[in-house]
Image 1 (cartoon, rainbow, N blue to C red):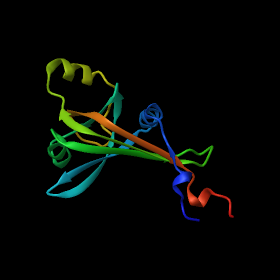
Image 2: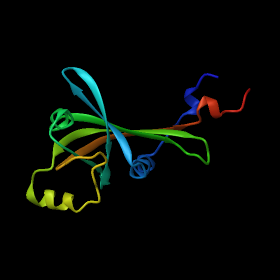
Image 3: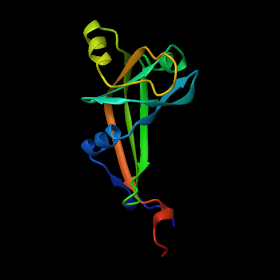
Length: 141
């Protein structure tokens, strides 16, 4: 059965944010040397921004001061419905002293081992979310 556009529910922005808040790990999409790169990162939502930790490297250099995308998805085990949320915005390293102090107070531990001393804040300006029933969960027609 082919998925029809009528089978896709566009989520309200507040529903999308709730799903992002409830998901431990998402994927950061950046562009490196004109090629897309995707990194799994744990995150926190802070008001209408998304915050993650990292160390020096590709993820940091490709995101700081640039437009990025962040995606989370999942399946609701009770309803069988799948969902996906994409956030877009500009990422910046948290540098101002009062912002750094506020950020260090967040319960955002590094997901992967090693020091992740740098906090990056994505100032989100676009939120899209959708919910649908995967074809493998639909009753046969």
